[in-house]
Length: 179
Image 1: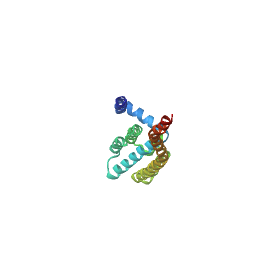
Image 2: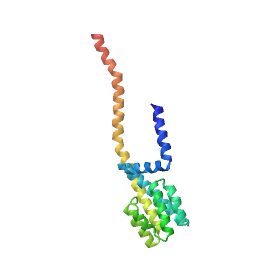
Image 3: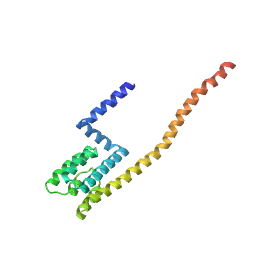
Image 4: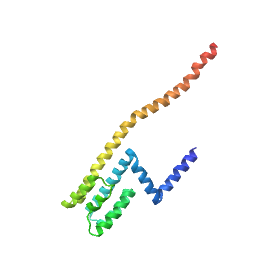
Protein backbone atom coordinates (compact mmCIF):
# COMPACT_ATOMS: atom_id res chain seq x y z
CA UNK A 1 0.00 0.00 0.00
CA UNK A 2 2.85 2.38 0.82
CA UNK A 3 4.51 1.60 -2.52
CA UNK A 4 1.30 2.31 -4.41
CA UNK A 5 0.78 5.54 -2.46
CA UNK A 6 4.34 6.63 -3.17
CA UNK A 7 3.93 5.73 -6.85
CA UNK A 8 0.77 7.81 -7.14
CA UNK A 9 2.42 10.72 -5.32
CA UNK A 10 5.50 10.48 -7.57
CA UNK A 11 3.34 10.28 -10.71
CA UNK A 12 1.34 13.35 -9.74
CA UNK A 13 4.59 15.21 -9.02
CA UNK A 14 5.98 14.30 -12.46
CA UNK A 15 2.69 15.28 -14.11
CA UNK A 16 2.68 18.65 -12.34
CA UNK A 17 6.22 19.30 -13.57
CA UNK A 18 5.00 19.47 -17.18
CA UNK A 19 3.55 22.73 -18.52
CA UNK A 20 0.06 21.28 -19.06
CA UNK A 21 0.21 19.61 -15.65
CA UNK A 22 1.09 22.91 -13.96
CA UNK A 23 -1.87 24.59 -15.66
CA UNK A 24 -4.20 21.78 -14.58
CA UNK A 25 -2.82 21.90 -11.02
CA UNK A 26 -3.27 25.66 -10.76
CA UNK A 27 -6.83 25.46 -12.15
CA UNK A 28 -7.69 22.68 -9.71
CA UNK A 29 -6.24 24.54 -6.73
CA UNK A 30 -7.90 27.83 -7.79
CA UNK A 31 -11.33 26.14 -7.78
CA UNK A 32 -10.96 24.71 -4.25
CA UNK A 33 -13.10 26.64 -1.74
CA UNK A 34 -10.66 28.01 0.85
CA UNK A 35 -7.33 26.80 -0.48
CA UNK A 36 -8.00 28.42 -3.87
CA UNK A 37 -8.41 31.89 -2.41
CA UNK A 38 -5.39 31.38 -0.17
CA UNK A 39 -3.27 30.24 -3.13
CA UNK A 40 -4.42 33.21 -5.19
CA UNK A 41 -3.55 35.65 -2.41
CA UNK A 42 -0.10 34.11 -1.94
CA UNK A 43 0.62 34.33 -5.68
CA UNK A 44 -0.64 37.92 -5.88
CA UNK A 45 1.39 38.91 -2.84
CA UNK A 46 4.55 37.42 -4.36
CA UNK A 47 3.88 39.12 -7.69
CA UNK A 48 3.20 42.55 -6.16
CA UNK A 49 6.11 42.43 -3.71
CA UNK A 50 8.58 41.27 -6.37
CA UNK A 51 7.32 43.86 -8.85
CA UNK A 52 7.61 46.64 -6.25
CA UNK A 53 11.14 45.65 -5.24
CA UNK A 54 12.31 45.40 -8.85
CA UNK A 55 10.74 48.71 -9.81
CA UNK A 56 12.27 50.41 -6.77
CA UNK A 57 15.67 48.94 -7.71
CA UNK A 58 15.51 50.41 -11.20
CA UNK A 59 15.08 47.17 -13.15
CA UNK A 60 13.37 47.80 -16.53
CA UNK A 61 9.64 47.04 -16.55
CA UNK A 62 9.75 44.26 -19.14
CA UNK A 63 12.57 42.48 -17.34
CA UNK A 64 10.71 42.99 -14.03
CA UNK A 65 7.62 41.34 -15.45
CA UNK A 66 9.65 38.37 -16.67
CA UNK A 67 11.20 37.92 -13.23
CA UNK A 68 7.82 38.36 -11.51
CA UNK A 69 6.21 35.72 -13.68
CA UNK A 70 8.80 33.16 -12.60
CA UNK A 71 8.73 34.27 -8.95
CA UNK A 72 4.96 33.97 -8.57
CA UNK A 73 4.89 30.21 -9.18
CA UNK A 74 1.42 30.47 -10.72
CA UNK A 75 0.48 29.89 -14.35
CA UNK A 76 -2.31 32.49 -14.23
CA UNK A 77 0.17 35.20 -13.25
CA UNK A 78 2.74 33.92 -15.77
CA UNK A 79 0.13 34.30 -18.50
CA UNK A 80 -0.86 37.74 -17.22
CA UNK A 81 2.81 38.85 -17.10
CA UNK A 82 3.29 37.78 -20.73
CA UNK A 83 0.24 39.85 -21.69
CA UNK A 84 1.46 42.75 -19.55
CA UNK A 85 4.89 42.71 -21.18
CA UNK A 86 3.35 42.64 -24.66
CA UNK A 87 0.90 45.43 -23.83
CA UNK A 88 3.47 47.64 -22.07
CA UNK A 89 6.00 47.22 -24.91
CA UNK A 90 3.32 48.64 -27.22
CA UNK A 91 2.90 51.69 -24.98
CA UNK A 92 0.03 50.56 -22.75
CA UNK A 93 -0.35 50.89 -19.02
CA UNK A 94 -0.22 48.25 -16.31
CA UNK A 95 -3.72 48.98 -15.01
CA UNK A 96 -5.31 48.56 -18.44
CA UNK A 97 -4.19 44.96 -18.90
CA UNK A 98 -4.64 44.05 -15.22
CA UNK A 99 -8.29 45.10 -15.63
CA UNK A 100 -8.78 42.56 -18.43
CA UNK A 101 -7.54 39.56 -16.41
CA UNK A 102 -10.13 38.03 -14.11
CA UNK A 103 -7.44 36.54 -11.86
CA UNK A 104 -6.60 39.98 -10.49
CA UNK A 105 -9.18 41.20 -7.95
CA UNK A 106 -10.72 44.66 -8.19
CA UNK A 107 -8.44 46.01 -5.48
CA UNK A 108 -5.32 45.21 -7.52
CA UNK A 109 -6.88 46.89 -10.55
CA UNK A 110 -7.80 50.07 -8.67
CA UNK A 111 -4.56 50.31 -6.71
CA UNK A 112 -2.42 49.84 -9.83
CA UNK A 113 -4.41 52.55 -11.59
CA UNK A 114 -4.01 54.87 -8.61
CA UNK A 115 -0.28 54.12 -8.55
CA UNK A 116 0.07 55.01 -12.21
CA UNK A 117 -1.85 58.25 -11.75
CA UNK A 118 0.28 59.31 -8.77
CA UNK A 119 3.56 57.99 -10.17
CA UNK A 120 3.99 55.61 -7.24
CA UNK A 121 3.37 52.17 -8.75
CA UNK A 122 5.98 50.49 -6.60
CA UNK A 123 4.50 51.96 -3.42
CA UNK A 124 1.00 50.82 -4.35
CA UNK A 125 2.23 47.34 -5.22
CA UNK A 126 3.96 47.21 -1.84
CA UNK A 127 0.70 48.18 -0.12
CA UNK A 128 -1.20 45.50 -2.05
CA UNK A 129 1.36 42.92 -1.02
CA UNK A 130 1.19 44.02 2.62
CA UNK A 131 -2.61 43.79 2.52
CA UNK A 132 -2.53 40.28 1.09
CA UNK A 133 0.11 39.21 3.60
CA UNK A 134 -2.23 40.25 6.42
CA UNK A 135 -5.13 38.44 4.70
CA UNK A 136 -3.01 35.29 4.37
CA UNK A 137 -2.00 35.40 8.03
CA UNK A 138 -5.61 35.88 9.12
CA UNK A 139 -6.85 33.02 6.94
CA UNK A 140 -4.17 30.64 8.17
CA UNK A 141 -4.76 31.53 11.82
CA UNK A 142 -8.53 31.03 11.45
CA UNK A 143 -7.97 27.69 9.70
CA UNK A 144 -5.62 26.64 12.46
CA UNK A 145 -8.14 27.56 15.15
CA UNK A 146 -10.84 25.61 13.29
CA UNK A 147 -8.62 22.54 13.02
CA UNK A 148 -7.83 22.34 16.75
CA UNK A 149 -11.23 20.90 17.82
CA UNK A 150 -11.13 18.40 14.97
CA UNK A 151 -7.66 17.24 15.97
CA UNK A 152 -8.69 16.92 19.61
CA UNK A 153 -11.73 14.85 18.61
CA UNK A 154 -9.63 12.67 16.31
CA UNK A 155 -7.00 12.06 18.99
CA UNK A 156 -9.72 11.36 21.55
CA UNK A 157 -11.21 8.71 19.27
CA UNK A 158 -7.80 7.10 18.70
CA UNK A 159 -6.96 7.07 22.43
CA UNK A 160 -10.47 5.80 23.27
CA UNK A 161 -10.01 2.97 20.78
CA UNK A 162 -6.68 2.02 22.33
CA UNK A 163 -8.16 2.08 25.84
CA UNK A 164 -11.11 -0.05 24.71
CA UNK A 165 -8.73 -2.52 23.06
CA UNK A 166 -6.75 -2.81 26.31
CA UNK A 167 -9.67 -3.17 28.74
CA UNK A 168 -12.07 -5.25 26.66
CA UNK A 169 -10.10 -8.50 27.16
CA UNK A 170 -9.96 -7.82 30.91
CA UNK A 171 -13.75 -7.41 31.07
CA UNK A 172 -14.24 -10.56 29.00
CA UNK A 173 -11.99 -12.58 31.36
CA UNK A 174 -14.50 -12.14 34.20
CA UNK A 175 -17.21 -13.83 32.14
CA UNK A 176 -14.88 -16.70 31.25
CA UNK A 177 -13.84 -17.23 34.89
CA UNK A 178 -17.43 -17.18 36.22
CA UNK A 179 -18.86 -19.10 33.29
